Length: 466
Image (cartoon, rainbow, N blue to C red):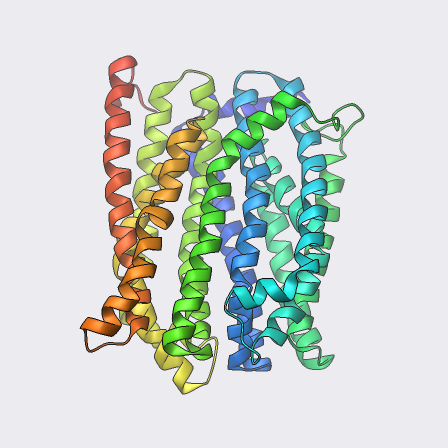
């Protein structure tokens, strides 16, 4: 137990650069693996089932975003709360957060899965499904929703492991899931001939195996946080704090759900079912780099949260600066891939020439502002990591609701009526335009906050940073 406490205490004493590497590298590997986990399904489905199956899979993105919204509401909020309580040496409350995470994920997972299954077909048609694509989407989501509780528990406990000082174990859980899924996918899709349903079964089985390993880890009484009697009763203050902190990523994923619906509907209207498939490919590729930045943010979160709770503000500033630099390097790499080598990337998913052409056009437009989105993501996560939920929520929603949603509503019509391009170009162009505007808002908000921060805490200085 003493060693576990020391592992948490090092967040306030070890050099910031070393800590960020120690926590971020496993998280980045885990998030990269998680992104590959999604890409593997798309690749095997594209080559093993067909281009329309990719479109069917893309139709499930809004529902997956909605499920992720509820998962992040609990997981991200709980992880931040655990980090802050460990920084305050409040180990009893941190234990109770673990128990509350289990109960909340079970309740939300069952309710969400049941409701979505009951109304699955109407939901998919609303998301832009056609008679040609709904069968693929229905087969995939039925299996995924049956395993929804497992998904929520797996993601929630992974966040707790990382926040409690076990970034490597969190990474191993994710990598195990990816490897198992990658092994099972070709077996179920090609050998058993289960098609897109086989990809979903492989996904759920992989998560079940990793969840069993997480349960084993957290059942060890030598761990600082572990399962034991008395921690599972829902406590109003803990639940309220989890929800308040997790509201930012929840609303971000909820907004993303509505945004993807608008994108699918716009692309279907102006380009047809294959255009939705093109967006599915571009989204997977873009999400790969977004997930790496999310991994970097996850590495920053316990360091910033702990030191903010411990009032070591110079260390908070240092980890913010290092994270911004790292995120910008990552998203700039994505920009170079999207502009210089799009055919190589898109060719991983399909051999269909028309789908490849549509995907390349979309990728070059969407990736044009990628060098700056890393900063916007880090700024949002920083506010969330230090408990400033209101600012994090605003920044989370600024891209989707203030900029992207109006663009998706008006730009397609503008392109169709007033330019030589069709309305689908308006859908594609809305995305980089919103990235540019949201990053500008994040820059001004973070700059203003840091000025206030330095004014109220003059002890913060570059010389004191570790």
